[in-house]
Image 1 (cartoon, rainbow, N blue to C red):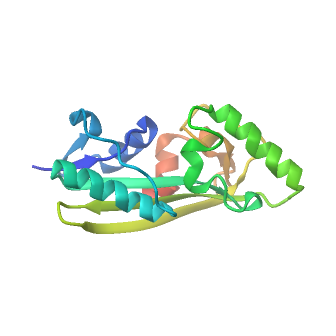
Image 2 (image 1 turned 90 degrees about the horizontal axis):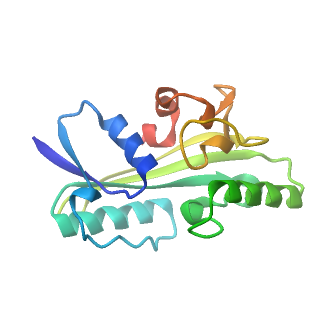
Length: 185
């Protein structure tokens, strides 16, 4: 059976990716299977650049076909912030409650009624020589009035998906995967 390395250190992303790939004829490996592998730098100016960097980095070190992704949350009223900095928005050790509070503060200060928002996922698969596949997917919605829901992770509690009439933090894993940026990619 062929193996694929899932190159993420984010436990929420790892759970989603493993769930999405479940049933495919591949043995899934994670970075935990390669202790001591240096972490890839994310210096790209876009989600796609970061996904390519990570896929190439880990494929080059491990020699394995590697799936890497970079994703984030964009809010139109904040000119696309937090964007590619979603995981480190405010600062790397900030809690999501702190990030949400800052987002709502900034939207209020701008006086914007525009709540359009989206999740973006850029995914790249690299072999030992180069990137062999890449794609970008989005899911459109809006910034919810307030965070809610025990499900998901990251920005899910503040992303309202109109077709469901609920936040991603309020839907099941299966419902989210069916329409999410990561599920589409």
